[in-house]
Amino acid sequence: MGKIIFYEDRNFQGRSYDCMSDCSDISSYLSRVGSIRVDSGCFMVYERNSFLGNQFFLRRGEYHDMQRMMSMGMMFDTIRSCRMIPSYRGSYRMRIYERDNFGGQMYELMDDCDNIMERFRMSDCQSCHVMDGHWLMFEQAHYRGRMVYFRPGEYKSFRDMGYSNMRFMSMRRITDMC
Image 1 (cartoon, rainbow, N blue to C red):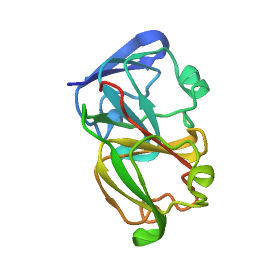
Image 2: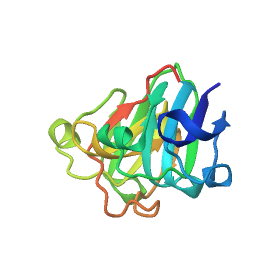
Image 3: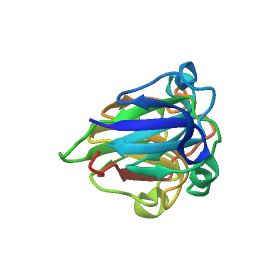
């Protein structure tokens, strides 16, 4: 079971909210998030309510202020929701597709891929099917840029999911002991 604590101010000051599951609206509990402590597990934090907008992966640790998180690659300065990533110890398998609705070139991944262009000569990824494990997909090669969390399921159109101006170029398994 995971536990994340949100604080209104920097350095774990001000009012706090303890969370041990998904929370679609942190603003119901706090007016803002200034620092975060992840006591156990792994979480995705989201820029908007209901798990929408930009996302960022947090593992166990202390995040003293938003500026520090932004220096770690987080692309936003407001946190409105979070999703707990369940612990997983099995195999990892995902199929990525060049076009919507599982069209075009298809490649199956069982490990991290730091650059789909170099590895598969694939210039775009518009849909995927996650069969096993939990994955992060990144808009740039070498696990950089904005990221999106994918749990097992079929994702027929990244455009329909709100990622129309985002191209996924690298994928990484979430292998942390979440």
